[in-house]
Length: 541
Image (cartoon, rainbow, N blue to C red; front, side):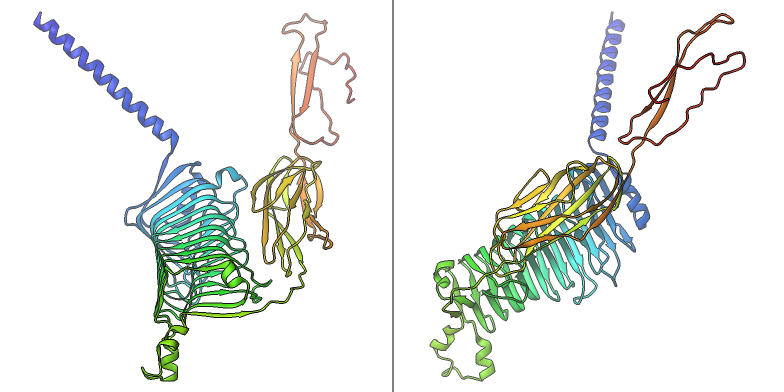
């Protein structure tokens, strides 16, 4: 009895062990199906790294060696959803040319050019990270980026990215740390930018919805510089020191910006808000600026300079609240003039905290001027294949445009077009419509185009608006090669037949491609002992 009981207990244990092993095995397989992990050995060269990334599937994890060191002579190209884990590795790239270490390049399949993250690296090159148009949801986290020279290169360069997060990065020794051109929903937080040749950050080409929070800026020419069309920006809780030109330069654009709870000290000028600047295109307009809760002190020339602003806009469009601490600015004038303490009286001492250089405006004469350009990802494609077509419209005049219609060069008879990125307006029936475009603004449209007719086409898109003649892009020659897939099959009326009797062979030839084939011959050959008695007439005979 006891022996049988022991056997039963053993059987139960064996069953439990089998179930446990089965459960673990199933769990491991499920995990491997959802996201594979690809390991890159310490010291691997560029060719090896790129091959692993190319072979990885969408959503996979690329795992660099913990604390590894890599030297590469080109760019690591990424064009699909991947998680790139550095694990503290260092990558040294090209030091004498703007060859990015990580190049997030446009993919023909927009559905996978998204949700890419790069984390926990030290990158050293003239330029380190480039993110091309059409990317969605990009995360850069826990990175140290070191440039080769303050005279050249950029740490992070982006164009038209929808959803960019930069967190916990340390960037130094580039000409520019971060450049954000176009796109929407950029968040830059908890980072340290220092020892740079020109800009800590520059925003341009209608970059929209930007948050810059809880960062440290030190030792550059400009902290944040605005290019054309920038709006909906929050700059908050940053510590900005030692900018030898301007800490915050709202120069080419100055719209919808909140500057809140920052410390801006020991720079040449704390904040410049400038209207009518024409160095970068159409004159700047000012509206919806809030400056609140900041410590703006001990800046060499001025705390805040309101430059060339229409008198009516000073209070209406710029709100500088009483909760700011704006003191001790302009000491450079005291040093320059060698004024004594008595000469540097309280009235002079406060006069450089906020300097207003405004004018009484005349009614402006405005005239918009629209330009249109395009690019195509490839000039040769097989029928049914896909390509990326990008249109860019700019208003380089000095007035807001009327409604705009762009007839794209891809008619519905030759291709199907799907929008992958659109900065403004609506797209339907191969027409892009924009209600209006402000002075200095840029609009972008990115289409994924699938061809459906072979041949050679000149792709020309045309812009139409009431204030100027129709404007067209330069012709782009597109060659669509035929898609022909010919196959044949035979069917027999009988598997067995007597001598001198007949049976039928039916030959079926199909073309499952998108295009008609040219004329071809199909030969009917028989084996020994058989001969063709008759051929029925085909519709193609």
